[in-house]
Every structure is written in structure tokens, then in C-alpha cells.
Length: 224
Image (cartoon, rainbow, N blue to C red; front, top):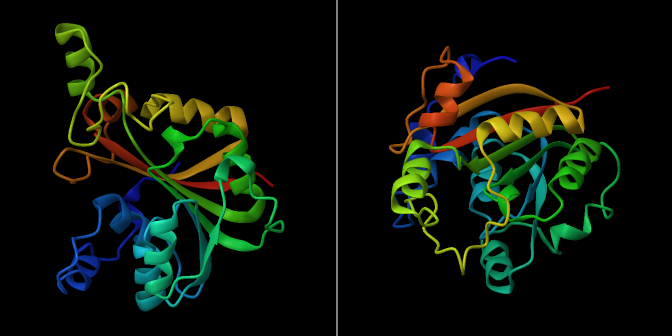
């Protein structure tokens, strides 16, 4: 698997686009944008208010659509000029043909899905590449809170209490690598980000990423 060093697009570009008064894009979205080729066909699963797709349309001239279930988020995305299909992802991606897209994105949604293997297989079916970002439940702060405080952890990335969290799968970077092997998708690139959004050393061992990475972004491809 190649590390993120082959990516050369600047991180500052999406930040400049947010100076109109909107909140700055999440750092994982900036990384995702770097890995999407100009002019490609993109499907954004759980697209939220459409901010990522709108940015990609403006700067990468991509063609694509989002999938979102929340009514208010769908309305917000449409107002941004993003095409959105209102659908529950748990039902799969049966609406889409094989290889209909170049890249499919699943950002900060994997941990809240019941059928994680199924959605990864569906991503590999409808697109050549998939990009997945998720919070790392193996981060040292999470481990220490559970070990010494004796309660389910709460961090900046995981702000929910145990009783109202949408996260039903507590996935670590190590867990996700094992899932990719089980599903049969290839890991092309990856980056782990610390609490300040900075990438950890690319040549660091996986255990280091799993301990100090607050979130991770993976570029996947299907095995032909």
C-alpha cells in the first residue's frame, strides 16, 4: 500500500474557499478532495449538507451525486447545487449500476452503519475507487478513559455519551485494515491524523497510527 506522500495538492485550497463565513471544512474532507481526480464521477454516501461535493464541483469539475437520509441536510445540499438522492444507506446501493462512478466516498459514516461489510462491497461494485474516513477508537485518549475513568470515552472526535451516540461500531485503524482484507478490497493509500489535523509520519508502524491517530482516511480499490 502506498502512503500519502504521492499526493501533491495543497491543503490550503479548500480552506480559502471557506472564508465566505461558512465553517472551515473538516480536515478529513480536505484529504479526501486531494485524492479525487479532476473531471471524475463521484458518489458521496452520507453527503450531509453537500459541502464536499459542492467544493469538488467548483475546483475539480467532478460530476456526481450524494446520498443522504436527513431531510434538512438534503435541502441544504440542494441549495448548494448538489444532486441528492434521499435514501437510507442500510438498504445498499441497488439504485446504481456496476462501475457507474470513478470514486465513491464514505466520510465519518462507517461507524454508524449496521452492515459495514455490505457497504464496502457495494462501494467496490459501483466505483473503481473508494475513500473512507472514520474516527479511530484505538486512540490513546479513548483507551485511557476506558481504563482509568471506567466509562465510555468522550473526545473532540467522539463527543457523544454512550446512550445517545450514533456510533454502533467502535472501529480502530487495525480493525478497518482487517475488514478490508476480509471484504477483499485493496488499500492503495492511507493517512492518520492527530488531534490537530496533522498527518502522522508516513513511515510510522501501524501500531503507532492506531495509538496516536485520532482519525484515518483510506483510499481503496477493488480487486479485479
